[in-house]
Length: 356
Image 1 (cartoon, one colour):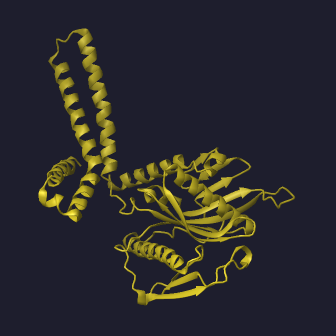
Image 2 (cartoon, helix red, strand yellow):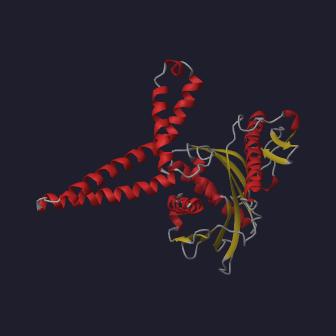
Image 3 (cartoon, helix red, strand yellow):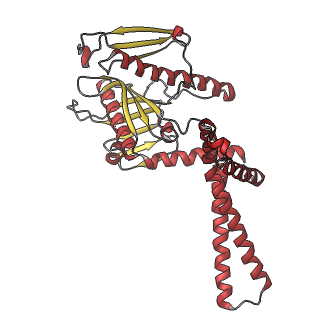
């Protein structure tokens, strides 16, 4: 590990010098490349240099204690310095192990999220709406921008489906763990007998794909236009502004009707389509490598769940890591950082097991 860290330290210094080179400074594209590489190494190099300083402090204290002949007060101070250096060394060594784990190339990307009502009819659509608002509030707490790309509302205020873009650096690194089937247990407002119903909604989290990631051949697209409709199928637009785009090679279909402009709907549909094609290509690559990667969405069946929202008990449970939090109200207001942090920690520990 330390040979690699020493190599990264040298590379970081080389990049420092390159950023003062006139040839680099006058080439905007090269400067951006060098600056990004420099930024990518900054955390690990900073931690490594702090680790080396802690090792020096430890060795210095150890040397003084080994020599002996220290006055009692000074000896106590040196022992405290040695203990502090030991703690710092151990903490930074663990941090460095995590920093050296392979990084997900999509972690810095924006995300496109899709939420669909699963099992449970109207109640599932209402739950999909609750999840949508949860993620919007979480995004707002991070200072991220949210843009609805497509939505199909129901008569009672829920969503059959809603797709939206969240723009913010590192959005995918935090929200990628939200993919899967979410389950809700509560008494619907229409339930006169007070019985608890179980419903589901599926959440898909896709890294936003730029044109450089996925180039779409216009000849591979079938584009249909139609009149958009509102809740319950009611017509809300007499012009053909809604757009349906079919990617013929993959069979992926994306519709968008939220904008009054056909051109804007087409642009939004292509944004979602590009993300889906990119995700499909990555899924196939991962399956070829691992052979056992499951679909991130599943079927929406009640039994396929990653998280349960239990209203009567006021709790949320993430079944992947066995975490239960009794603060349902706060979580519905977007307070999900504790869950995300726990999932990241679990993911990192699993990765560390794989490299040890």
